[in-house]
Image (cartoon, rainbow, N blue to C red; front, side, top):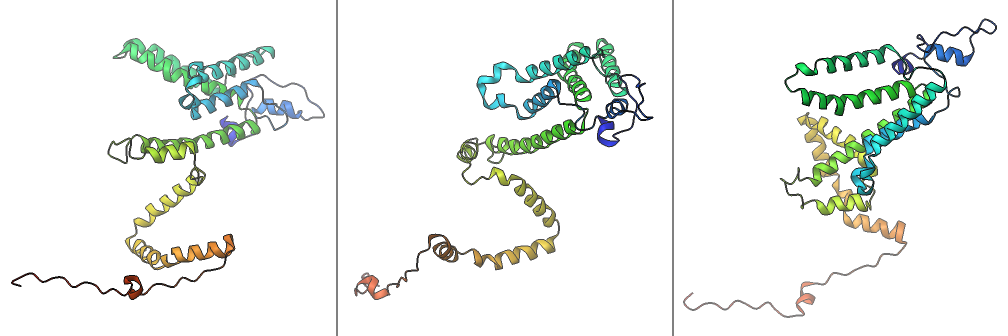
Length: 289
C-alpha cells in the first residue's frame, strides 16, 4: 500500500515472476502484477475489498451504539470474517498463498511473534495476552486486509475518502459527547440536554452541515487572540459595524424582498394621549415634614 500511494509502478512482485513477453513489452496486467500496482480498470473491487470497506465503516461510525437492536449482531467481527474468508478463498482459487508475503507483512508477523514469545516473562502474563488478542490481533487483521485488498488507485481513493468522512464524524461526535456528558456545565447533564436532543433528532437550521466552518472560524479566533493589537482592532470594528444588524433593517428587508408588503406608518402616542389628559397625582406629604 505504501508503494501504491507514494511510488506507483515501481517495486518487486511477491506473487511470482512474469515470463511472457509480447513485442518486447510486458502486458499491462503483467506489469501491474510485477510492480504491486494495479491500474484502474484492470482489477475489479471484489468481495474482500467491500468487506474491508464495510468493516472500516462500522469500526468508525459504530451504528450499534445508536441502534441498540443491531448490537447483538457484532457487526465489526462479522464484516471482518466475511472479508477474510473472501480474501482467502480468492487467493486459494488463484493458487496463491493466503496473504502476500511482503516485507511489511513479515515485519508485522515478526513483531507478533516477539510479543507472544515474551508474554510469559511479563509482569502480568494474562493481561499481556489479553492485550495481544484484544488490540494487536485486530491490528494485524486490518493490516492484512489493507495490504491484500487495496491494490488499485480506485480502492485506495475509496478507502481514503471513507476515512476522511469518518474523521469528520468522530470530531462532531466528540463535541456532542462533551456537551451531553456535562463537560461545559460542571457535570450537570441536564442543562444542555434540550440542545443536544434538538440537534440529534431535528437539526432545523442544519447546524451540523456548517460544523467544518465553525471549526475553521474557531481556529481563526484562536490565532487572532494571540495578537492583542489585532484582537482589539477587530473587536472595535465589530462593535462599530453592528448597526447593520438592527432588527428594524431586518424587518424592512423582509417586508420588501420576501413578504412583498408595503410599509404601514405608525404614529407614536404623546404623553398626554397616554395619560388621557389625567395629570400625575402629587404624593401626599407626611405630617411633620
